[in-house]
Amino acid sequence: MTGARSRIWRRFGIAACLALPMVVLTACGNEEARFPNRDNFTAAANDYLAQRGHVCLAKYDWPIKVATGSNEPDAQQMPLLEKLGFVTGKDVAAAREYALTDAGRQHYLQLPVVVRTTTQTVVHPGDLCAATLSLDRLVGWDPPQTRDDRTTTSLLFTYRIALDPWATAPEVQQAFPLLARAIQREGTMQMRLGVHLTRRGWVADELDMH
Image (cartoon, rainbow, N blue to C red):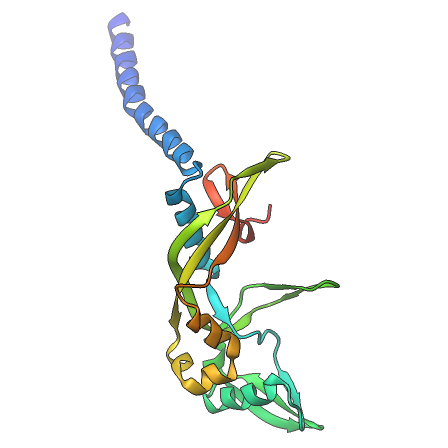
């Protein structure tokens, strides 16, 4: 019995020693991800842009009605989207009503969009998007601050933009000036991103609202 127990404990001890470095490495890896440094903040910015780096057109809720004789942006933008095959229009009382086609729905990203003003907060179900952003360069970050057991900072970065093929047309960029501005400011415009520290590292505030 003594010999059998000894062999069992020796085998257990070997297994424990083999497992221990994995635990230590995992713990060390998590701790390194929590450091406020360029590598970790770059990873947080990349993660955010991979999930939310979309350039969209503020076309949240469908169908969209354009009043007859309107000078609003929709009066120029909706006929262009119809020409591209993304919407279909029909005449209704004193207006034209536009709905997304199957082609248009392929560019409608169903992620909640929060629009805040001084008087209200509105959550839309999604938006029609034309391009995606990726990280160009992490410019810097503010010194992390801890309050109520929450450590936060904000990052400054520049971006690269990849247009959907249809969005490269000059008439599209003319009709959507915010898209044109995003293209013009590629690599130069500095964007700010709030991040906070979690057990697994730094995460964009927008991706983790807890």
